[in-house]
Length: 199
Image (cartoon, rainbow, N blue to C red; front, side):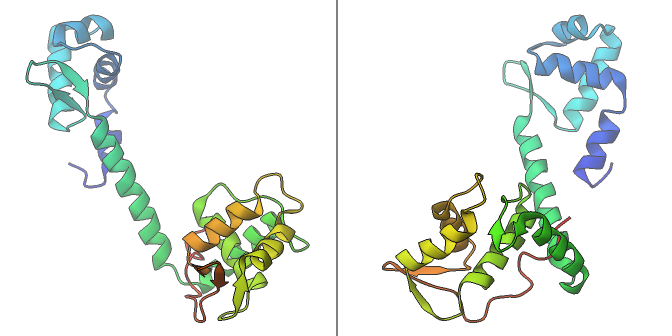
């Protein structure tokens, strides 16, 4: 059995009868007879397909024998894949991402203005780090009004984002700390954070 869940699912669904049986369960077939009818499979094909689907945990049977899709398993696989992607990005050296960082910034920042925020989170973090580094000196205290003015300038050419959302992102990512209406950029940020794994 494959250890990578994605490879495991690909192997599982490489067989047409399993795909058809799974689709039937997903569409509400609750018994093997209903699955066979909905999927157009023989009783034997259905039994073999359902046995394999249940062994892999993608189809479950309740106490009453009613078949159902194990949606929680798919969510777990998705979380694990996201974590692997994040871990792989963290393992890359900052130098290897310099060209990617430049490309991201050229794409989303023009003439000191934010064109739009990237949809991909790793790229978004690169852009937000850049905005923090260009707008705020480390260790200097800024009142909220000043922070808003600086961030509003970044948003002038973007219909995608406003200065309040931008400020919230910067605080959430710890590019700015906030205490009693005063903001401060950390004195020694981790230069590698948010740079790796951009692609």
